Length: 101
Image (cartoon, helix red, strand yellow):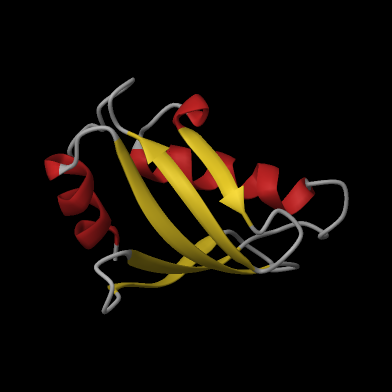
């Protein structure tokens, strides 16, 4: 499912905007779906471990995505939706370009 995201990252310079729909309290961290929306932005649906309290899910989310994409955690920034399930995330590809999977 990450092939679409990797393609976008490979051709993107600067920042990539990604919409996320996060389901907390999961048994494991996993990507459920990844598709391109009508507006051209990617939508990634994820299940993330952790209780939505004190930023635990957001921390687990960034840890998980950075590990999956082999990009430094410092390249990710949640711009909207810190306390909601729907989030907008910037991925900065100019600092540390992603490795091809």
